[in-house]
Image 1 (cartoon, rainbow, N blue to C red):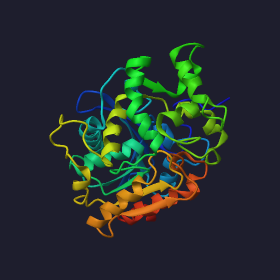
Image 2: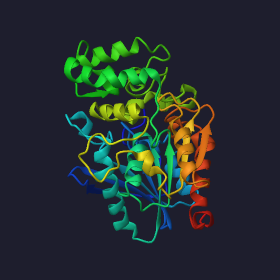
Image 3: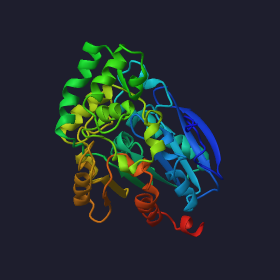
Image 4: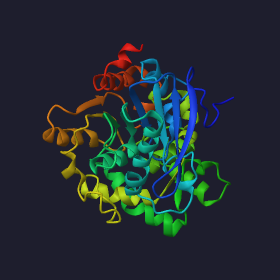
Length: 367
């Protein structure tokens, strides 16, 4: 029997509680708390698109939540915001952008978190993919400044992608919206009935992915990457993980690609439009004002956002020398630094070390 979808079996010896709350524009979001004991340094985890809390609590190997708890960070929270595949939002027609998340999701989550932990404890954010981009946007705009540190995996405020991804971003959203007639792409299209649009899309994508026989793996590569596979190196995944990638990475709405197209064209994070005047027109121009230390992580085989975090680290370090850090992870890609079978050995110790150096030392003494 396989691993149950949306399971919490990967975390033991912790009280697990759900804390639903509304976003600023009225969507139902949720924080999940993994609590062993009160801790002065609280960790908040942010998934990417189209993932969820599940990427941090995988039972098939030592996951990030369990490592943090074991290393003395005994109060860990994970946010499922509007990109989460635990919600139906991305299988509905919508026009959400990363601006909506920066303005309405992350600030509301921090307020809800503060309501439970109080105002004195430090909050450390560990963010993946577009969770990282949107949070860094919110941080740079001064909307989510109440954090002690940020760990950003793969991409932050610089957005550089492979050439094939540029073509997909340029042509894909309108093609699928107006020609094919689908408002989202889904890793589960391969399970659709034979001859349906989803099935045909999946089979067409699989023609170009001979590296494995899993249609969900192929779709996810097509949705975000430019490799075979695009988001990870196969050797970094446990077999159980590869068998359930559709559980971990679901559907995502096409309109997010339009925002990414504008960012990729600019080379860095920019607002989609002027809907929110509180957001800066050029995030890199504001990046130098960020005084929160950031650990930039990226695999050296990143086929989604290439060297985005390397460049972002260099740019932000020019303005704040010595504040930010960079770790390039040999043999890793875009998301396997979080979901990889050996990430607990190769990646998580770097995150824990960074957190400790920006905490009060209580986590070190709690072990």
